[in-house]
Image (cartoon, rainbow, N blue to C red; front, side, top):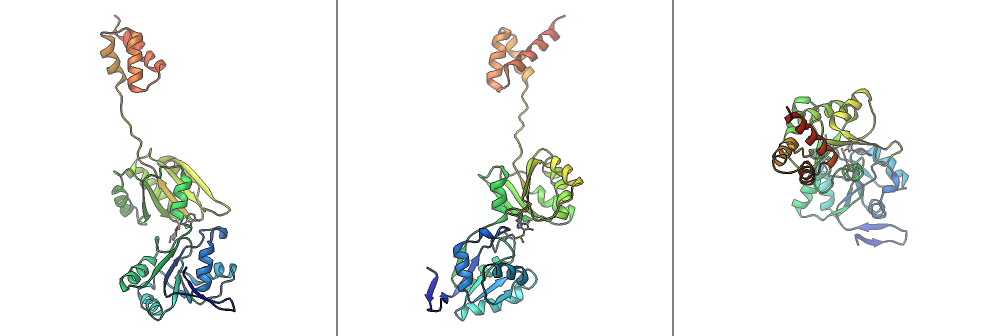
Amino acid sequence: MIVEASGKDGSCKLSAGLYVVATPIGNLGDISLRALTVLACADAIACEDTRTSGVLLQAFGIKKPTLSYHDHNADERRPDLMQRIARGEALALISDAGMPAIADPGFKLVRDCREAGYAVTVVPGANAAITALASSGLPTDQFLFAGFLPPKSAARKKEAASYKAGEATLVFYEAPQRLADTLADLSEVLGAKRPAAVARELTKFFEEIKRGTLSELADYYKDHSVKGEIVLLIGKAEETVEIDLDGLLAARLEKLSVRDAVAEVAEMTGASKKDVYARALKLQSAKEP
Ligand code: SAM
């Protein structure tokens, strides 16, 4: 167990190292018991936004020094955080929501700690991409998490084109004010008929999953502006195998009865006997003088 010692006063001490601790993505009930223990026992907590995390820590009665560590100060702050660990401190890392190191600068701190040979312990928990994927009803056997797409349309389309061929469900984070434009670009580049889902405000009061094709969702969000946090998911392209029913039928009608030709073609193609029969009658009437 990571808790090294527990004093009579209930104080606790963790062994030195970095503790990457997942926090809820909305519903506070999603914090884990282990996360609470580590946050309560850490010497300090590095946070993306100390005010946002302050609210979370206060909700759980955790009073520990917080240090800011975010996209804009990450390179400058990392040496100090590393020195703390070198001095024997247990440093917890949390992000505004969810799993640190996923779409935030946490990974650089993990990388540097690993390179320096410091212990890194991950306390897993909520993550928006995985929650959205599980909730979307899109295939989960393969998925590709691609974080945020570029904000400008030309760069966004270029990046989207690089994902066009794959089989995996694509998972993106997106800002609400860009959702409609991004859906329009993805519909153009990846295909209007690709199945997709918009997962919004997961685990929160206004949680919503909207499913449809890319073009349906692009049309919908063009007319409905939304707020909140969003994960956008895109399923693989449906296979559209063009079946030449008429060709298959015509070849068989040369040598078989209508009934047998229809039965054979229906079985081969999976098309309904009724539909194949209707095609066969049309073909025959077209042949008649
Ligand atoms: N580390 C976080 C995680 O584990 O999911 C993600 C950090 S990333 C900077 C923030 C983005 O995650 C948001 O812009 C949004 O796209 C997505 N996100 C976070 N919370 C969410 C929620 N409750 N519902 C939907 N998306 C969410």
